[in-house]
Amino acid sequence: MTVALQIKDLHAWYGESHILHGINLEVHQGEVVTLLGRNGAGRTTTLRAILGLTDKRTGSIQINGNETTQLLTHQIAPMGIGYCPEERGIFSTLTAQENLFLPPVIRQGGFSVEEIYEMFPNLYERRNSPGTRLSGGEQQMLAMARILRTGANILLLDEITEGLAPVIVQKLGQVVKHLRDKGYTIILVEQNFHFAANLADRHYVIEHGQVVEVVLNSELSEKTAVLNSYLGI
Image (cartoon, rainbow, N blue to C red):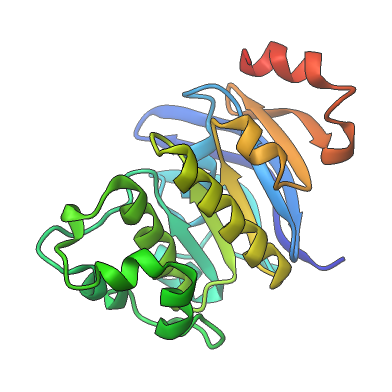
């Protein structure tokens, strides 16, 4: 299988704080993988480091075979990387539709507006509402919709289910499955392991800035105790 993202010996810092201590992982094209771990383990920092959003990073990050550690964020994004941060980043002074159109199209092959509204009918109904007047679930849908319109096909999704009602979580799970079926490559940082377990091909457990366990989806039942020890679930 084609390797979409390969990370070797990745170290990352915020100021003087050394957060990542040699992350190694790879994601094949069309795979869904999760980064599991407790708060502060380094999962979000791994996503941010991929995009060059940490103060310093060393090691190797290859996107579709291209080394990117010396590149800036605006040079990395056009390679097809879409980042959906935990805080969502919805602009309160813009309508839902204006928020949707805010990021530029960086590559061909993104979702059309019609396809987005078909996937997220709530957004069509609320398209003229101020962004922060949307519910938490609708804001999360909007944050995902924005990166799908840009043409990004490697998606970094950070805690997309946090604080959302079960019906919205179910909807987001359907969307992730749909994207996987369309060949998107997806990295999920997720606290809701039951959500992630049904979607991912492989799980990377991160602790103290390092990958300490890799679990295939087919191994979940036999490695439940190991995961419980790391995640406290």
